[in-house]
Image (cartoon, rainbow, N blue to C red; front, side, top):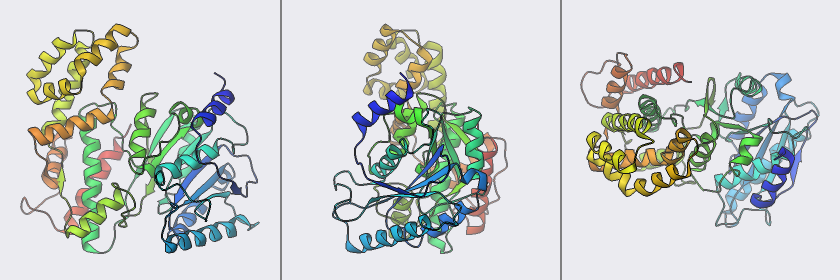
Length: 431
């Protein structure tokens, strides 16, 4: 189907919250960076400053589209904060000397706010990305949609790496490297170290398991072509986890490319605006008075690895035989597969034919992988202490871990060494 027709059909079927876009577009746009903003007065200037440090020639090809949003029942102080953000954006738009092409969508003012039942970061991203489809200067499937957040900063080569990746046709969807800013306060600092180590440990474990889904799911790091966005039926409207499920859909179309040379720096501030994610995790740690220093047991990742190898070898054999062999790996694995309906589902997939390798990825997707890890955690292999888990991970990857005096939680300086070494391990070997 021609791109223009597929775009029109997508917007007719899946378009939801339509709002006017206010912009200062002066040049031809082939990339739109969508930035949800909820009560970000005081944060947004930091982001704008880092955007101004991008290559000027690339800035002429990019629109930064802010979706200033809140639910219809938002507190007055949130509405007032968003009003200040809109005024700040208008000031930039009206400045004839700015290098930034800025736009905003008002999903905050009275009569414009988001419906309470759907309001959240998923709908904010979707609103901006849907609108962006009609803002490109030359409509086409290879135009690029990027997700960012208003409380982030980006490295000076951020746009350059995005353009290199997508212009070279290296990717249909990409996830940019991330590094949380570390707060000064000790508990908050320890909390974000624990959280980022959890994310990176998961990514390393998935890579060790040779999983097709060994990428990170951080919403402010996603980029994709317009064609991919439409084929995924757009961003979902989840209040959290929208990034995980969107990337899972995109990965089933083409492998996610990791961009390791540019960096998004998410804020490490606390937040209760979403049910999970960085802000909520930090808030829960701060309320508990200590971080959750735990990561998945290495045995769980090794079982996933053995299962994926088995599944590849036996994909064309009967589901019963596959289950029997899976029990030799772990009875907990075979129990999980039976509970998830593998016997019936895989029999139907085999009967329908097609690309078996692709069907394997579609059936045992990122969500099922995560559910298997949770099942193994709850039934056989409990989580381990973060730094013990990282020591084991380093050894498997052939590295010496930082030196600890004992097996307890190390002091701040040593925790930072763990984080820095883990970041290098993840991103120096990203593919």
